[in-house]
Image 1: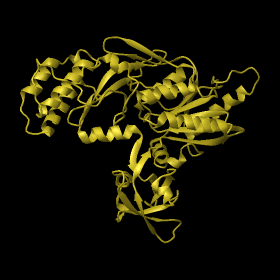
Image 2 (image 1 turned 90 degrees about the vertical axis):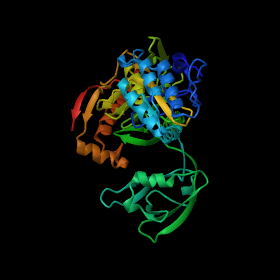
Image 3 (image 1 turned 45 degrees about the vertical axis):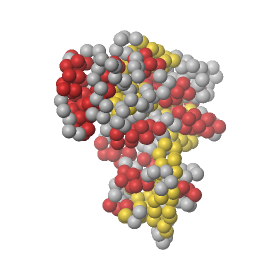
Image 4 (image 1 turned 120 degrees about the vertical axis):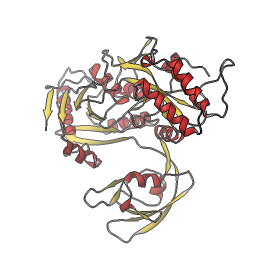
Length: 447
């Protein structure tokens, strides 16, 4: 299969975020390269995967000069060596990719590729629990039970203490470790021991099912005399857009007068999700500009399908990256939202994801993106209209206890809510145009 950069640029699908924030376009995950008759055939040799990866980068990498690396010589070097194992070949490929000086073009082992594609699919086989650890007592509590999940059917509720997972005490396992134990192949079982309000422990056996991962949370908040819709978006996975649509619709039906959209800590995800969600808030105007290695430019625009024109404030921080920055840049440059918080991560590159023939994968930077005003965010990020800086201690306390987000204990949220209230009050005056934020004061606020 010989895919051009134009195919990547106009693909309606997109895929994945990893440990490094990303906006990615997806392409077919079957072997991404077919060897021509003029090229060597390696069949089951580790060199087959190396050659696939080399060909993909040769065809699609955004920098046609490959960071001044002789890419033809790289191929000869990779394929001229002998490898005793796939791991040895993988190591050689990772070393080679580092020559591009691009942390977003990287090789994924079969396990990494599987985990990341599962993560961004927005679905996981599990029991439907979200957990937190009390920082003072180290006890593990249920914070959320997914509707219709095995956990809900077994009667588990928020506030229940999780004592044991498959007879292992939760005291000695990290939250991430516990979550891993709750996941597993669909149809398999996990045994939990829980206690409610200090009562005698009870044991339940849950059968894992395929669960949609909630990435959008929403609630009605009161700010002065204004009803505010608070929406927190955790990542841009495959279900983010539909969850966002439900949140906006539900809050609108509850007669909110404006929205705070919280993108703090959101590292990005699916490129197409950022476009779809931008169009929910933005009725007209440019969303983002993409430029590939040939200099071809594509402008993605709103299409008149906005769900709401109510005023909007966006919350961001230094971990808001990639797709988060596409959305924030679109809303800010079009005058649709006021941005509050701290400067965003600063990633203005788009990757494509390729599956390789042995189940491993490759992410490749294929385009630069620019905000509607033509701003390149690389290494600079978006500086908020109103900067509210947190100390390291404040940040740790807030994000280690997510229930505090969007409350009076969250000073960044309070500032965003106050700015939004000013806009709502101004819109109550005759002749004011909905959907345009006009805060009375912009600047820097430090706590």
